[in-house]
Length: 89
Image (cartoon, rainbow, N blue to C red):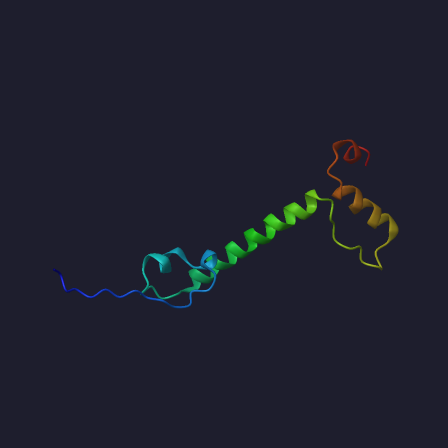
């Protein structure tokens, strides 16, 4: 029987989806600037997926109170994703 010891590292990585894959492959890997960029990219992608779902459901950002009415109408028309409405402006 082999009496070799094994070690399993149990530590805090944060959310696994944000962890640099290099760290998952090598526990001795030291985080670097590129690791932060990877995590930020995952975060942005998640926000874009949620934003897409909100837009499809018809949600739009709030109009700033001081916005001139004609400008408000223009960008509200731009938000509409129904082709017949877009052709009218």
